[in-house]
Length: 232
Ligand SMILES: *Cc1c(COP(=O)(O)O)cnc(C)c1O
Image (cartoon, rainbow, N blue to C red):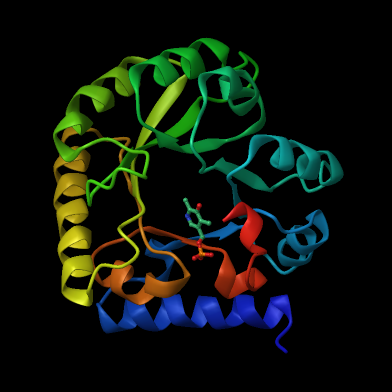
């Protein structure tokens, strides 16, 4: 079985070859290691070989791991799970990025609750590109209004968009969703100078997402191995 460090090397190689294939610089794609359900020790192992950005979905679980990793000064935490409004205070205080913002109430609360001594919270709007009932995220035509609210909030910085496309789409449908995201992102980045991040692509579709212009892939399984099904 591969070690976690070998898997990181493989994922990095996959990103690099996808970039080469599409005439993109490898540095133009960030790797977010999605560590939900995985122990702090696994995060530490990847940090020690240079991985810096980590994503968590469950607040309580994330806070517990953060407690065990306070010595890792350069670790950048991203919150990527659905946001309940009673969780915003902890999210605002304990994360550098939030990728799953999808309504005004959450924007207001994060802005009010971001501690003054920290830099602004880096925010992505989650887009439900395949209009799935089960998924959080806004419809494409709601992005502009939320973007304006985030851009006007002084404790938040609008960085771009995040999406989780439908799981069972065909390759052609998946490509369509990726392309639709790329168009939305492109329009947003021409309107806001701070927008530079399209968070799109997971273990199964890293290469296709990079082909469609993703600037950040969120990878769990391909790095850490399969998760126990309970928390999927
Ligand atoms: C779990 C999760 C991922 C990682 O998915 P894998 O298929 O394990 O790579 C990426 N993004 C979000 C929002 C997730 O919840």
